[in-house]
Length: 416
Ligand SMILES: Cc1cc2nc3c(=O)[nH]c(=O)nc-3n(C[C@H](O)[C@H](O)[C@H](O)COP(=O)(O)OP(=O)(O)OC[C@H]3O[C@@H](n4cnc5c(N)ncnc54)[C@H](O)[C@@H]3O)c2cc1C
Image (cartoon, rainbow, N blue to C red; front, top):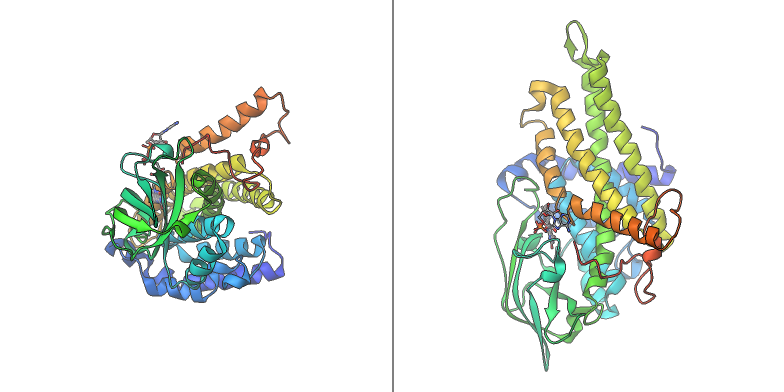
């Protein structure tokens, strides 16, 4: 496929594709079956620099640009064939590290970022509870202020990396804080009263540990608050934007090999005395997959440009996630159909990716919620009488709060 990378970016991309081929791919199928997350792989990936390519050098990162990081992640996803490790990656790098870098205090960054970037620590970002998912303001986790900090009680549920996490960024209502009570806290998971569940048995994403946290009278110091008391939704929406774009990147990388494998098979497999690729039905399926990769990449690069320029890109980020999720699911089904009987076997990665693709319909906000975000931005712009920019309202005029970063969404829309 035609490259969108310069020479240095292509080198980075190739390097991380190779890292993933050697370190992640060989055990992906068995980790899926046995519900295993391999901490040594995580440490090796940290040592390869992947978690900190775009992070400042003072925290152990490499200080490279967003494009270089993008190239690395696409290459890594291409090589890994493992949405398990990729989901863990997005949770830590896209949510925890991004949230911490933008909203953490200097002390919090110095304390947590180097270990996360090195892969020695595993981070998780806990919002969802059994009683609330999309409607994050309905969360029940509570924090009561005391003389020496906050006492946290409640449960978080279905959280990526939770069963093995060393660090958790979580969100709770601070008692008595009024309307703006959702607050973000960061703590190690070794504090008294904080328990982690075993990994949940899920349909897909089984190579990532997903489970629950129980907070039983967990006492954290005031210095554990990220983004100020009542500032939790700002942290959350900022991190969500990064997460959505990173998920799109990961999916672009996962989809390319699907297209290539289908193309190859369409030339090799004979039916009725000729390659199956000579049938227009097969051609159409592969062409659609290929087009979706290119569309996704274009929207992605536009979203990344907006991020780099500090422009709000809430609609773009939701578009990325929506297109990525639906395209991946469709592409996995097509790959199985094109490969026929052999595509349906478990020794191919298609069925694993198909199961994993279903999880992405929910993780980091459901597809319905992404449509809702885009719709809300469209209507808001329309009501203000503003013309659509380049045919699309990308949510740019949502950036009305100078206290928040350029791409954090106003917190009224409290949905994940
Ligand atoms: C693989 C995976 C990893 C995850 N990792 C994390 C994590 O690290 N941290 C974390 O906090 N959570 C995580 N989650 C949880 C995820 O964020 C939630 O599942 C998601 O927010 C949806 O919540 P819910 O499942 O409770 O669905 P609900 O919010 O109960 O929604 C149920 C259905 O109703 C629809 N719906 C709800 N409200 C609306 C609306 N206003 N308009 C239209 N439709 C609507 C939804 O789209 C969905 O189809 C993960 C989930 C998965 C699958």
